[in-house]
Image (cartoon, rainbow, N blue to C red; front, side, top):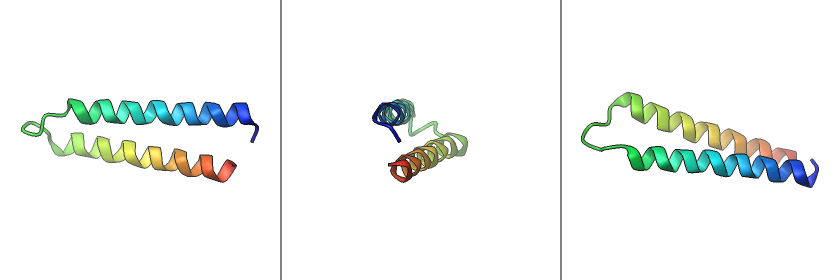
Amino acid sequence: MEKGQSNSHVDDLKNRLHQFLEKLESIEPETTDLNDIDQLISLVDELENQMNRLKKDQ
């Protein structure tokens, strides 16, 4: 993988992580339901998959 493409993937991963953190901070523990938790788990799974693809491509 060329360096520019790798940097782009890292930037995408950083953006997704930032979105995850914003979502996590916006959740109110008193009103959180299972759907909210499932969405967070899905985001973590997506981040993990992106990171694994990035490692594999390098």
